[in-house]
Amino acid sequence: MYWPPRHASSLHGSQGAGRPQRRQKAWPRVGLIERGARTRARLGAITAAIAAALALGGCSLISPAGAASAVGAGGPISGTGPITFATGKLDTGYLAPLIASWNAAHPTQKVTPIYLPDDSDDQYAQLVTNLQARSSVYDVMSLDVIWTAEFASSGWITPLSARQFPLSQFLRPAVATATYQGHLYAVPFTSNAGLLYYRKDILAAAGAAPPKTWAQLAYLARTLAPRYHIGGYGGQFQAYEGLTVNFAEAVQSAGGSLLSPSGAAVTVDSPQAAEALQFLVSGFRQGWIPQAALGWNEAASQQAFEAGKLLFLRNWPYVYGDASQPGPGNVVAGKFGVTTLPGLHGPGSSTLGGANLAISAYAQHPATALAFIKYLTSEPTERYILERSALPPVWTSLYSQQALTEQFPFLPVLKQAILTAKPRPALVNYNQFSLAISSAVHQALAQRQSVSATLTQLSAELRQIIRSD
Ligand code: GLC
Image 1 (cartoon, rainbow, N blue to C red):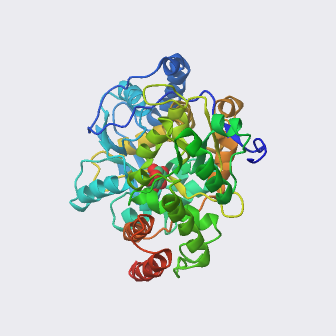
Image 2: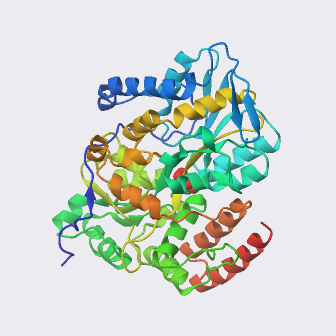
Image 3: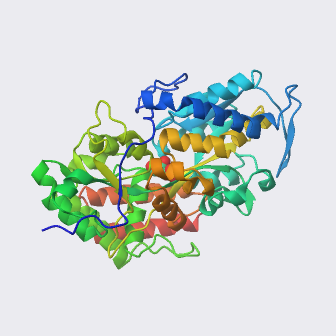
């Protein structure tokens, strides 16, 4: 006997956003994206919205003569001309039409996209290598929310004047991730929170509600998934940033933490963290998390879910847009729902994700970079990106508009998940901190080290790392 039919707070997949471009290995990738009929039908409204965004963001700032200047926190930002925009390539199907519109309106300040790899760690390595060499190859950079402290303290990004952006209308936690030592160094672009995707067809046939606790999730994953010859649960368990995120969420969802509230003490060697790691280790040991998941990032875990090989998946909201669109490799359109992450004793807590836009300190044309950032972060553009790719906007207003909540019924739940999500520590050497976590946790998941030995050793490593921050 499973749990009673769906809890009132559960949400169900329905028709979604246009299908963003599938993951591809080749990059850089420039040019227009092939899109589905549904997306084409929405194009008229989108074009109008983008025109409004262009008026709001770009054109008001920069005169056609190109003698633009704006004030940044570090002084005037000037210099117009062609620029590049570096961004991770996963789910950037929305970008080519936006850049095409910008370029049509700004023939002397054209933007060329530079697509970075999918994984946050690989993007980081590529950006840092160039910035350390003071390369001017990137003008505007889409930065993972975890990099602000390091990039700002290294002098790689230009301080901005907070007054120039409608920050009071943005989700507060997103603004905090773009700030370092009280100064704004980037502009919030997309936010993110982890969600639980589930096969609503399979749960409904069993009369089961979406799980709210780990015990419920594990029970369904262990007993129900095998009847369909599919895996029980998947997430991002490859040794990279995604695993740090999944582990942090598990620890928080058991009531634990990585660091004390002040950030001064490491708190990961706790009974709560042990429960959290044990939950994931048990999944691998008992087989309700497929062994292959040890190599999964966002895209690989999404592909497994879309191929119909998983009952439950932890992933970001963009998957909703993709998985709602039937296509080769996707058999779950119309058959899945999405809800908040489960936890040890009840609903869990997400890690705060997302991306901010920053101007490289080595940019040749910072005024154009600033204007382009204003355009990309304007409300009409963010609305378009939500409709097109299901990426969570930073504009608070976009979480409650009826047309949008009809298209994405999970928006109120997502907003709540973002507002209650826990940010990762804002450390100058965050990358080192995270690498220590993901490699230790991966060892434990692969059952090469016990849970308690992993946490004791990790705790010692993290103490060293935060001491040298
Ligand atoms: C998403 C999040 C980002 C996070 C990454 C981990 O891109 O937005 O904040 O670090 O996933 O893989």
